[in-house]
Structures are given as structure tokens and as C-alpha cells.
Image 1 (cartoon, rainbow over the protein chains, first blue to last red):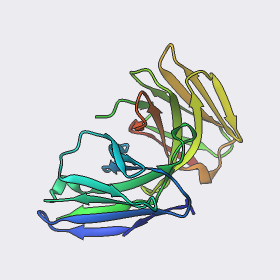
Image 2 (image 1 turned 45 degrees about the vertical axis):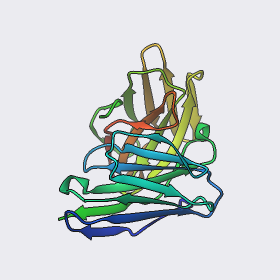
Image 3 (image 1 turned 135 degrees about the horizontal axis):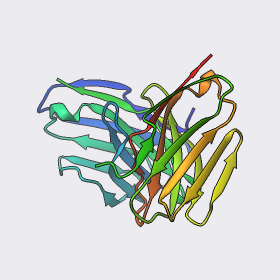
Image 4 (image 1 turned 180 degrees about the horizontal axis):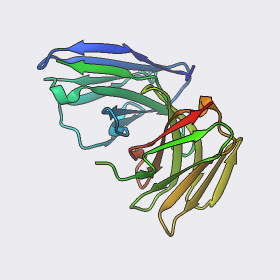
Length: 112
Length: 110
């Protein structure tokens, strides 16, 4: 039990569709980050939210968007899905970046 | 693109042996962290070492950091079969984002 919950665990979508991935925590983590991990690679930073504001973004197109809610839960939305979007999507939360992140178990997205 | 590099990419050892993994990076950092990932699922935070620290211990883990060489190493002593996993280093520079390497796949044989 990591304390960070992601849903769903697996998802299959068709190219061109839209998807919403969710992340929540039982604790008051005020920072949430999203990462994309392709098979055999390390996670790549998508973006980060702090107190509902985006405060950092990686090299991902605008069709990747997110939200953080007042209860610190978060969503990752991806529009116009492409085959290359197939990956494990990881949510990470913390209260203070100097103490490491708690990751969820991830959502495995397959685009066909 | 990845800006951290782990070495070796894969490591296979016998139970009871020590495992050493290395990590190199290219920029100045605030801290460097090591994570473990089992079977392509979520990452588990193992240890964080700040840029002004040179060595840190946590149980069977020992991490070193050499900022002049921009490198770090993770030592797992007395390895167990349950240590079989992928290990990633990740650093934080000026922003809070983590920059990961490609990882080292460790196999500990019983």
C-alpha cells in the first residue's frame, strides 16, 4: 500500500480517442506529478501541479493536460490518442520535494 | 530525453552477494534519489541523498554521491531474491521534476 491510488489499472483505447486517468491520496500531498514510462525506459516527466496550479511541464504536446483538485486528487487527460501514447502512466505525490515522492501503481494504457 | 544514465543496464548475481549500480548525470542537482520498480508497476522510493551529502545508509542500502564527477552509486548488501527488480536513479535540479535514467535490471538468483 503506497498511499497513492491510480485508476484504472489497465485501459485499452482506440487511436483518436480521449482518455482520463485518475490519481488520489489518503494523505494531504500538495504536489502531484505525472510521468509516462514506455516499455524498457525510465519515466519521463509530463507535468506537475502544486496547490491546483501547474508549476512545471515536460516535453509533451498540449493534448496532454491535467487538473489538481482541492482535495489534492488529480487527473491526466490525453486527447487525440496516438499509438505512441501506449505506456505506463505514473502519478507521484509528495508534501516536500526534498523527501522523495510516493508513486501510485500506475495505469497501463494501450492504444490500438 | 533521458538525462541520467545507469550502469550496468542489467546485473545478475547470486543470493548473498552485493550488488552495485552506478548513475551519472549532466547538470547541477539539489538531490539524487533511488527508486525500485517491480514488474513494471509503481516505483518505490528507496533513499534520497542531498547535494551536500557524500554517503547515506538505509538498512542494506548504501548510496554515495560525487558531485564533482556527477555520479552516484547504490550498493545493496547481502542481496535476496526479493531484491529482484529494476532500479532507477532520479535527480532534481533547479525545478522539482525528477529526471530518470533508463534503470538497471537486477536479478538475484536463489
